[in-house]
Image (cartoon, rainbow over all chains, first blue to last red; front, side):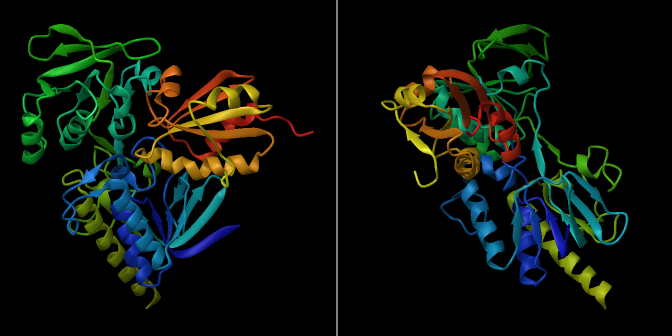
Length: 315
Length: 112
C-alpha cells in the first residue's frame, strides 16, 4: 500500500510548517511527516519546542512561548488542509519520479518533496554523557531547570541559546556558570547585556569540559583551561549543554548535495537542491542565520518554488 | 480518568503502586515541560490499548516534588515502571510509541 500525492514535507519546524501553510493554500494537500517525540530538538515543532519566550518573532510584541508559536503554525497549516503524520522518515529515494519516502515499511510517493528537517543540538562527545543524561546532565533547561533549585550549576556554550538557558536557570539555581571555550561570546548584544547584569551568572572563559564525575548522578565537572592547560574541578551538580547544532541530513547522504559541514546545498537565493523537484528550507540548509523567522521565510520560498515547478510539469 | 490514566498524588502514590495487580508505569511530568505534553497522548493510547494488563499513572512533579525526589527524578519526562511495589525500570526522555512499547512489553500481564 502506498500513499501518492503532489507534495510531501519532511520536518515541522517554522520552515516546514510555513511551507505547509503555503502549499495547502495552493490546494496541493501536502502531507507533513513531522517527526517523533523526543527530548532533543529533533522532534515535531523543532528547536523552538525546547525554548521559552520568543521575543524576536514579528507580530508578538509581548513575546510568545516557543511551543505555543509552533502549535499555532501547525493549526494554521491544518486549517488549510495540510495533513500530518507523527513519524520519522527512515529512507528516501529521489532518483526517479514519483519521489519515494519510507516510514519503516510504509511507502509514501510524491511529485515534489520539501526537506525541512532542521538541526539538532550537539553533545560534548564524552563517554560519561550517556550515563549521566537525565541525572544532572541536560540539554533542556525548560524541562529540567526545576530540579536544580538552590544548586550551583554550569552551562556550556557561548551563543544565544546558551545565554537563554543560563538566564532561565537563574530562576532556580543559586549560581549559573557559563563555560565557554573562547574569550568572548557570539550571542546577541541584548542577551549578553542581560546575562552580564544578572548577579547569579558567572563566566569561565577559555575553558573546556573534559569529564563528568559521578556514577548515578552528576557530582562535579572536570575543566581544562585552554590558555594555561591547568585542570580544575568544579562542584556543579547540574550541567546544561548548548554548544551548537548539526543539520539533520543523515537521511540524504549520497542523495542530495551537501556542504562539507553536512548542511544541504541550495541554489543561491533559491530553495532548489541538486535534484529536480526536491526543495530545502530552514536550518537544514542555513548555517548563517538560523532564526525562526528566516526559517519561516525560506519555507515560503520552497513552497512557491515547489508550486511553480509542479505547474511547469503539468503545463 | 477518561484518558485511562490514573492521577497520583503524594498521598495515593504508595497505595496505588503497592496495591496494583498489574505493573504500573508512572509518568513524572509538569505543565511547563514540552516533551511531556508530546508523550501524554501516546501514554493515553497505551493505557487504553493495554487496559487490565498495565496501569498507566502520572504524577505532577510541581505539586508532589517529594515523590520525584525520593526516586531521584532530575529530568522530565521520566517514566518509572513498578512491579510488585518495586521499581524495575527507569526511562528518561520522550520517546515515540513504538520505542516505549518495546520497553514496556516485558511488564504486560498476560490476559487470561
